[in-house]
Length: 76
Image 1 (cartoon, one colour):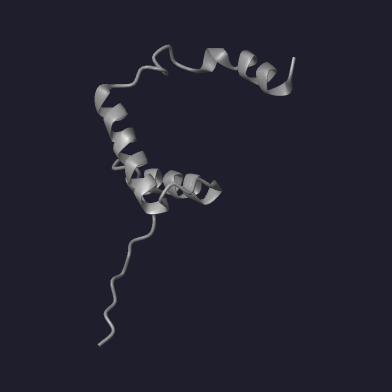
Image 2 (cartoon, rainbow, N blue to C red; image 1 turned 30 degrees about the vertical axis):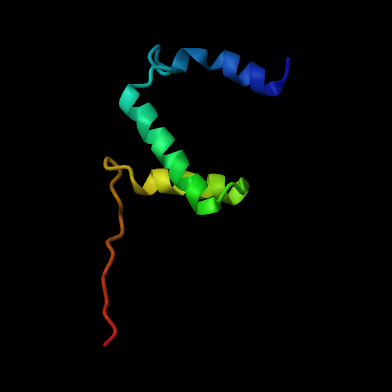
């Protein structure tokens, strides 16, 4: 048994039963996000694209509380 399979099998009890349940709204949002990423990267799938998608999810999370506030400065 590989280490990954052993780890997942030993931690199955920690995950809720409804972990795999995804609403239609979440699925639609995912497809819209992927379409936007495809438009930005024009079909060139690479590691940077996946990283940008993950950071986009972090930024767009309305429940996330950010410690730093952005001070908007204007240069005139």
